Image (cartoon, rainbow, N blue to C red; front, side, top):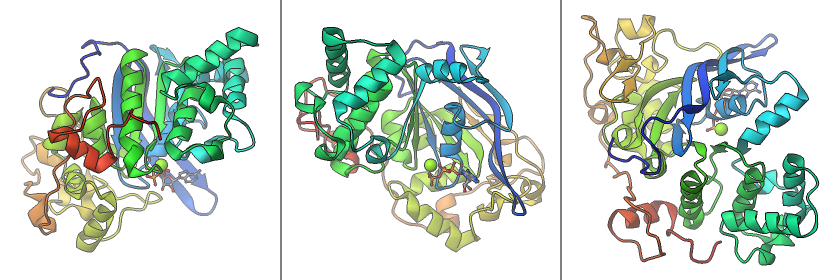
Length: 384
Ligand SMILES: Nc1ncnc2c1ncn2[C@@H]1O[C@H](COP(=O)(O)OP(=O)(O)OP(=O)(O)O)[C@@H](O)[C@H]1O
Ligand code: SF4
Ligand SMILES: [Mg+2]
């Protein structure tokens, strides 16, 4: 593992764990949407796990299942090894205090008629009772300082529309922190923000991972940001995980043909759908998903085996797994080739890599500059 989080001890026990998680949505007369199938996922203190995949692959459904905003149709959810399924309002409130969800659109998630002070006070009181006076003020200021909105007095009496997108997302994160959670589920937390402030939000989440030892699930279309930000990366396709491993290996040496396509399309994942569609038909229907490997209709290496049997996970090196028959020892396994050649070459875009975050804001150079190009400057200077 070449890109570990130095703050995370090697064998941290799981905080939140999904085992064979499944979500099928039923629509009367329109069949069943197989949104999530057989998903295993482990979140640990002080570690960021990225969940990467194109639109409709089931990422937000997993986030909502982990947040218990809706029930799973199969599988288990464990918090510190115990069955975590909530069966009452009280149990749900206790669970939410441990596991907080941050949404893509901070403007939509903050009520525009209330000030930051009101929004944070409400969150603090839900989770910590009726704090008042100096104690409440200190708590509110501490929350804003934790998300680097300083001096706090400048922000406390503002309405959401008086803040920039990045500042609003910081307030949304501060509100999540009011619960003093162990787990943050961040569903595309930067995708609606201006490119120039994205890196600042990722750096803030990294800082919270290290200082508060939060377990973070980072959901994204953008595999390049997973390399920069996440310790481990899970790649999802059509409701199933297809590849897992440390982020550096998955992004620099992708094994599954779909991951290879995803990396080649970075940083423009929308391009992926066009290229794959042009080459190999439509993205699969989740109402009637393809038999065998769900990627088979778009995979240039698919064989009869791929079209009939679901590939099991093969272990391919330390901590790496891939669900593709090409890595099995079956005699009838497909022969994998270069996915770029198979789909038609295009310039490969180097996935940016930020080796170390500087303690002090400095002019980015080298790998840091690459990440800056993709996500904007490493800005804790002037929080926008
Ligand atoms: N409430 C629902 N009822 C029926 N189908 C749903 C529901 N919610 C999600 N789906 C379907 O489940 C699949 C996965 O959706 P999901 O929102 O989890 O994907 P996603 O990976 O988050 O996509 P995006 O990147 O666009 O946010 C999609 O086919 C979607 O249409
Ligand atoms: S080779 Fe077969 S199993 Fe592997 S990704 Fe392609 S279709 Fe799926
Ligand atoms: Mg989504």
